[in-house]
Length: 448
Image (tube, rainbow, N blue to C red; front, side):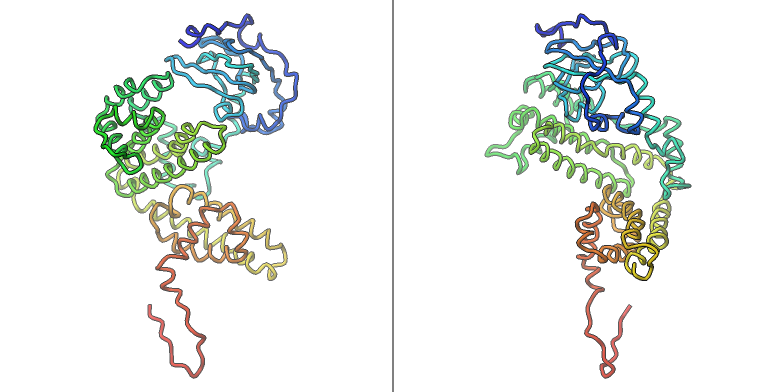
């Protein structure tokens, strides 16, 4: 174990829990609390009412051992510490990093060992903070009042909620090879040890060799073994590629529609992980490898939904459900959105409010479309459907009221979707411009 191997590590003389903490002496910026998970979900006034304490440690201190009684929920405020899990793997947590937003441990007992790697300050919240914060999290699966309007009385959503509450959902997990490889690399293993793990799964090892021989990694000589592949890639790149391969093969379906959604999720995950890796490389405050993994798994919660849909019979979930979803979206467009769109376009005819008021009301529908387009390429799936064709002309009108504002707005996905529709051959084929007709001209016949 880590603390047994390190000569510098020493057990603190102070007792466990709140006994070794003191009242906070320096004011902590409130922005620190707002970023914590899940504390940040609580109202500001409730956070301010907690009696917080702190503990200070020097490099080598064992901040707490696993199975010690826990009387608080600790967060790292300053310094860096090493967290070691029960299986011997571990990771470094630095103040201000993404990992530091989460508690170092939670529950009645500490679930890991934490060792200070520098001068460290820990902020201790009361032990009941996690249960209190959970009361402020909106969860439509548990609370019917939180269900979005367009999902009320939706048969598919109702069935999914029932399975969720009965604990019947199937949650996929990464293959053992990916898990073992990640844990082993955290222990600074060598290339030969990594290859032994990879070769336990012939599909992963052969796919890895195939990737190394692709134009991105290929050199003068072809690679034919896992050892040569890992040597060329390096351990971190190998770990990320193995995780990526496993993620792509996590779930497959014989249902064409569901497979299209899976493919769309995968494409978006690759896109997000690439951006995450690039931003982390430039920012230098987050590990690029961790950012890449976070991007790959950011939408993994959609997988249980697709597995659930794949297990339903045609009578329980069919194209009619998608048709109902499209119809609800079109009705929202033709009703509430169109009402405020007309007043936004011609605000001078409706002097009860200014144009910004009407635009804000219309943005409720615009936000719904933006959220949908963050999940797939079109409004209901990764294929263009009736809803896209029906709603597109009205979004074009909305954007044209104030084109500069719309292009600079937060609705980036909707902007892209709109531009793709405007540039499409289908749209341009029906938007042919004709000269102004005069009484002496021949009749112009518009064919259906």
